[in-house]
Amino acid sequence: MTTELFWNAVYNDGTELKQYNEGGSCNKYGDIDRSKLIQFALYNSDKLVLVVHLDKNKRLIFRRRVAMKVMSGNQEVVYL
Image 1 (cartoon, rainbow, N blue to C red):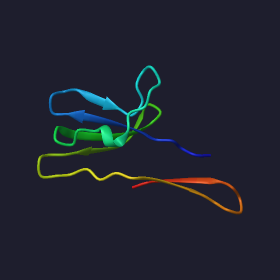
Image 2: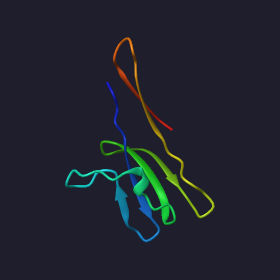
Image 3: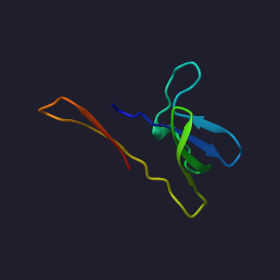
Image 4: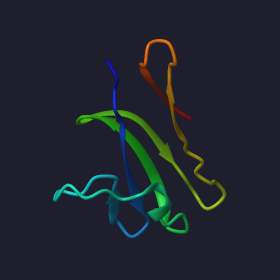
């Protein structure tokens, strides 16, 4: 079983950028405006898993790595 997480970016003007929009389209991690970013959150469905609060002296670094096991064909996802 693979748990898929999704992110939500909150800006200093109160607006948000969600990884998945209501219409089903997807925003890329690179679309986040880091100059206005004050909060980055990861969710599993509607459950908050992690929240990072940022100020002007902090910078967000987030990575999602996917690997496929050769023998089993199982996919592994790691969030860093």
